[in-house]
Image (cartoon, rainbow, N blue to C red; front, side, top):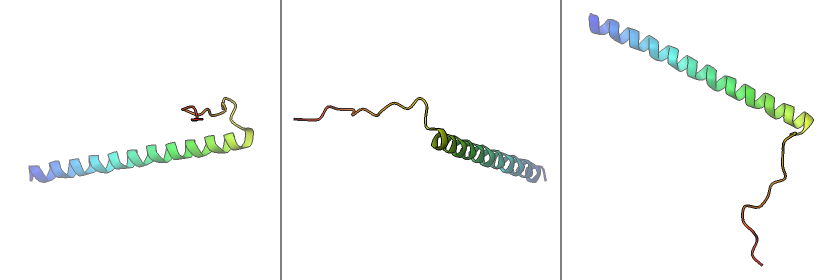
Length: 58
């Protein structure tokens, strides 16, 4: 009986951990979407022109 209770506790912990992971992932996704919308509306203020990493061969 003791092992069954331990298994139930562990199962509940895993369920809570999975829900927390999903909430964090959803919050990151929402934050990224908001940032992309803001950047699209106003332009990216700190954006620098991209430079080539290597010089082109002649």
